[in-house]
Length: 236
Image (cartoon, rainbow, N blue to C red; front, side, top):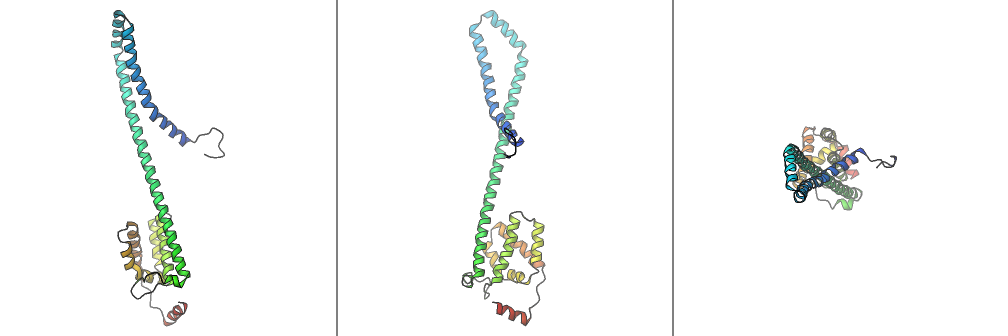
């Protein structure tokens, strides 16, 4: 509740929910009370009045029978309305539980990705730890750039899964990233291994397909000159 609200103030949504809950639970009680009264009153009159009075009440009852039919119809409508409201309330509760379960699952996935990111950062900072990771392809060692490219692509995946960006924005970002020589070559090396590791996971398969789509549309980088290769060798 808002701290600035006056004392006794109840939000409109809370009041509506309270009234709906009150109607759902009070309708059966009122219906039972009316049925009980309808059975008790004639029984009491039957044992406490004489034949003449009973005959008079019988004629009055026949005259008022349409009113009884009317109230019976109203009671039937009330019961049907109660069942309808209860069903809708149960559906709303199921939807809320589904949303909460999805949010919990998404939070768990984000926590796991944060742990994965931490492990990659450790490998980037420590060459000895970097040697623990398996080769991305035959004869190709894992470099700092490879781990960094992996972090960049994982960032796009997390942003899409948390609905920070839409599909069109994801595709635009991947197309832009594939203009980087290092990211292009990184995906060229790891694609086959990535498919084997994540095969069967719907989310991973979808993201792999999107990266492949951007990879196929990108122009292959031109071969690097001797000076650039020497500079990379010195850097490693």
